[in-house]
Length: 483
Image (cartoon, rainbow, N blue to C red; front, side, top):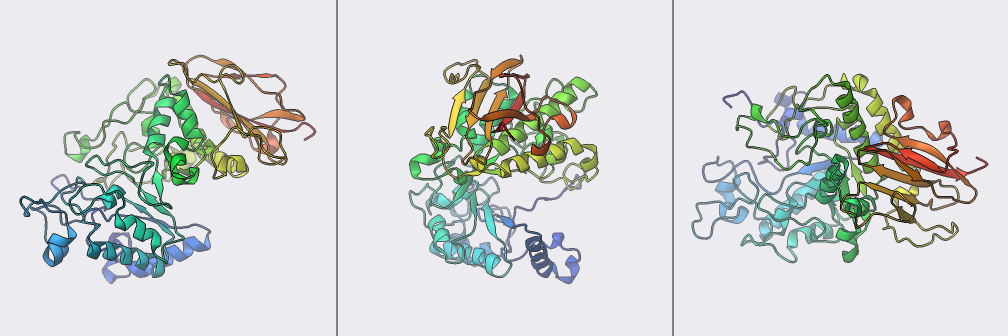
């Protein structure tokens, strides 16, 4: 407050049935609920669904020194986790001073009824749950094998068909990615984020982990009967660096937050490409854009559900701040001039989405098996290294991975994906597929409109080898040779 800062993000609720008035065009007139429903209706008319980020793990009342707004006065010992030895103190598994006692029957009922209200009355299409592992803690604060709340959310008739997305960890160390309670829940895949960040940064020996992430994270989900669609794949989110800051900073720069740079995560797996922050070095700037395209390409080539942080498609920066919750200023605002300034990245993002959409082999909600696809005579996936059929799984220095992904039908092009995160170019052989010819679709090392080529403008690649440049992603499409 002394710095003129405020809680710009929210994330500190106390009236769970009310939209944030500050989002209203005229908050003084109390129209925020009407405007919210109007917004949802218009987004639906445009073919856009609304998934609302909700916080049921803590409230704005904080700990013992926090304000008394509602729940502390009405049902303090029911609604919050209190210290068994001194019930004046609040257990804090959220980092926000208090923790909602989600699996008390009264609180469970309160949360479910509230979610049903947002679906039935406000017409939202789904929810993302902040620090959702709080839902797995019993009244003693310990993790439960079968906590009631996640299961009862699934069982609600109102909520049974909507997306449920869990941030499957909390601030006290409970980490449940791949093991969040329930059947239908999807999860923010924090492991995908970390592996892909390290792989693109150039860390060696991550070939097998990167392949598993690219293929839908079967190591996390297959043993429980879950599918790639249970994984929300992401590189960046509102917590942490933007994508452009991920390739522009080795360290967080949160000094403006007033906590002497102690806040925010120190474990970012970022790389500044040779210089910290803003630079006029054209070589570094070009490499940063190439790294951004590498991340975008991997995200949209991976099985699972891709999630893109708003602004990453136009290189939005927070100037190295990875915890901008209190910055209601240029650090957090969306500068629409970036759309023109970085139109090349916007175009690349748009074309990667189009490539993904025209390939059912990338979006199929099944894990790859390596088995032959009926009617194609090809395995659904074949892994390679610098030589065909010889992936470098056990090489601790390897930074090259390739795979051939077969189209599910004769009408779908096969894909050759080649990932070179090393510092030297590599000549990668292309497999022979009878009756089909390779055409270059993506090469993140190329400039201008050559970095990604729409299908109608692609040209046949004549050589049996493709030179994959350092720190680049290449995608070839194989279509019938006559085409």
